[in-house]
Length: 63
Image (tube, rainbow, N blue to C red; front, side):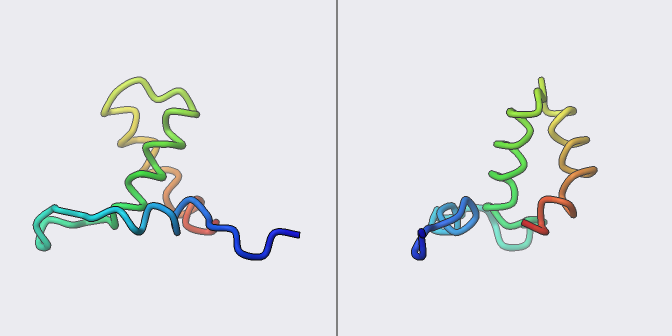
């Protein structure tokens, strides 16, 4: 059994986020998760990622 495994969000939390504090609407790890899942779901451009993120973020936050 794997006890000390690191999940996707845990791993990407370590990436430095150089965005301006006042412009951060979402944590960087959530943006990367949406991007990763969006690519896997076939998102083809920024509009697709936006729609995917808006419709799936609450579901993905459960995991």
